[in-house]
Image: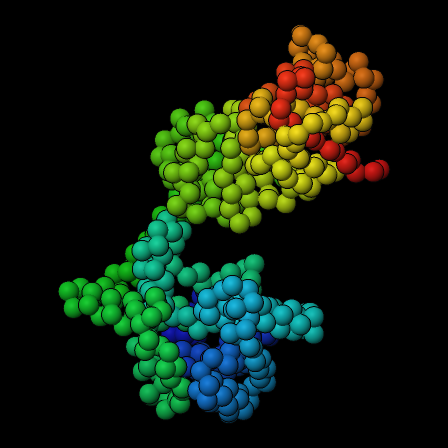
Length: 455
């Protein structure tokens, strides 16, 4: 069976929902062997296709050559073509990215823009983006993920169909050798990217150096790895069911925030694996697993951050929340001089070491800085909270304090608490705790100025 027959059979089996009469395919075509073969296969099957080509302007005349070649390919196969040119180096410098990362970002952003544009133009069609990743790419990806320590998910390889991105990779079952044979038999022209010979890129190093050496001792290494990918995909499905069951027993959602009981997490078997699956969706890395284990025994208010989220230790809980403090009911204050924007308004913290005067304004208070232990935690009240209202030697439950203040339900819900090491410093905008009051001998003061959101 030749490649065209095998490809047609694979398509009907793997993607039966996408056929010639209900789909429009956007083909990502670089001009290299893989994308050229994909273009010819799908054109021969009679699919309506558009060709998408990106000129990153990184390789001088070679980039121009590739663009011209892809334009000729589109004309020869009677397909409409869209070309986009990017100033990739400038984009990379502006955003502090590596060139490869910048190129990938630009490429997929433009692909998605074109896909959405075509979907609006053809609302009755399944508009899909197709890339020419094949079996060899899958093997390289799995090896890269293995060496990077991405866990079982990384060992599943490249996903054939990403529904959320409308992204298909129809050549995944086929090896590079299959594509070369098809191109030779059909006398297909294609262009070679000279950067593929450079081993400064991880993938090229694996392809040009590591895999050939492995094949000298293990001739079937690629076949074995591809079989492992199939097996690991089945294993991963079982693994995900088990992990989901574990996490359901650990994660308690309160609105947009997740609470994890520390004692229960500590007693969990296979702790490192469970922690990884717990923190991975929130942008944390595998290298942060030991840090989270330490966080469980760290002082109250300690936190761990990713690019998108923070995990805060609050008493018996780990609290996972977005870094956007405007949306959170827990905000960590790391230093004594800070301006904090949060859902209740703005809190300005200022250290004073010179002479000070107590202000009668309840929104502007002074507390004894020597009694504080950073980080401080700004949070919503909890059941069982108590403090020592200024001037009192006995503790009072917060709920009782609210009743005495004759607060309405809405007013109670608007209240925020500032605490230090599990002790309330201030019922924000209302009363400080007597344990943190300033005396005549106090020589270092933290001034807290609260500006509430006006409603």
